[in-house]
Length: 479
Length: 56
Image (tube, rainbow over all chains, first blue to last red):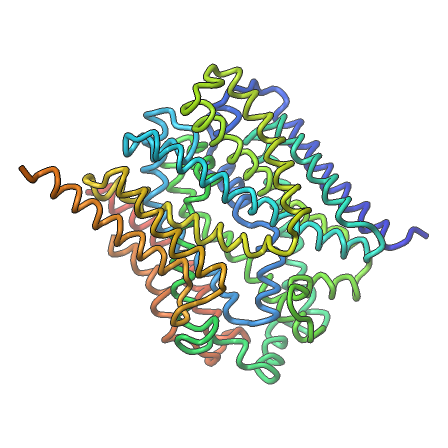
């Protein structure tokens, strides 16, 4: 008889390595130049892109976090469903337009877009550096999720930190060799596992413990009715928070450096349009994680703090055989590693192209650029690992920087299509204003009037952008 | 553009108005049903927009 921790962990290892091997096999015949490596040769069709974008979006914190938030607070978790719907409506208009600019000018990174549209190298470099700064903690966060999964899959018997470090270095080597196309193939496998795990969690757990999901909700209506609606107005996680958070997340959705890569990777603008049309359907599966969170709240109440993210895994570990836990933890591990690989690639891409190439004139030929991106993938991976090992507690606070910060790039990106008079200076001033408002509020964890601080920062950003643009125009027309 | 605003409005500013448990559909509380319903019909809205744009 093999001990349960060995079975569960062995399955996780098989799932992760199987995925990597599959992705490497799928990409082994492809010759790498920067276009191929960073944006997949601009050749992805609707379905392949759907899987890649979905793979980048649904990270380990969607996997663990939705259940965790449903478990601890209930209805505020619904925002995760809602913002996707809104984001894709925006993306339906924005992504095809951004793709056309990228195709015409041969752009590789999000920072390139700002540089081209506003004709300012300084803005491009600034965006590149900020993208980089925001991505590293986001990668580190995926490692925290991975650690939770491995610790539970090992039933606490093994050193999860060492396991995370090993898994992550293997991942970096994988990105080194396979590029964006490899990440997309890994996403295909990941989606199959994650969907299986999610349906199991949302259907099988309520069936076993309550008879049906409907019966589970009957129990919650009796026991915790407050969990099924949002608190009113400006209360903590109330309706004001909900509306501002949904809008903020939806606006920031296509702004991540890795999302830029995925946008450029499309075969045509029509592909992106069909893609935005189909992506909301992926959100539907997330409802099962909400079911799982509610089920865990009834089965195993009383978890506090960061332990809520482990709620549904703990139920699985306690009541189900170890091989089921292994499959679910394997799905979760892929949900951490696949987005992490897309992020590594994006961070390495912006530094190679916008900082090393454009600013310092290093590595401008195709071959040297691919090589530098590959080396930087490894360096970024080590940086993220170092940050994670050094500051495991504060990483969650850094996530706030990512979400609140990345949205501040949106006004500049949208204005490129909507308002011709906007200048590089105005965009830069807007981003700066947004960050100045967002970072202190997010760091202090304050929600003025119950509104998400990132949303207030976004308003400040737009106001400054508008004022600087109008002032600039007035100066130019003055004698 | 107006058509695109409808699902966004339904999923954001309309939510305080539907913030309730009853009536439940198949046991699922009304607020959750509302959000799910709008996400499922969003592709239909985008498809319609695409058709209209091509005609113009």
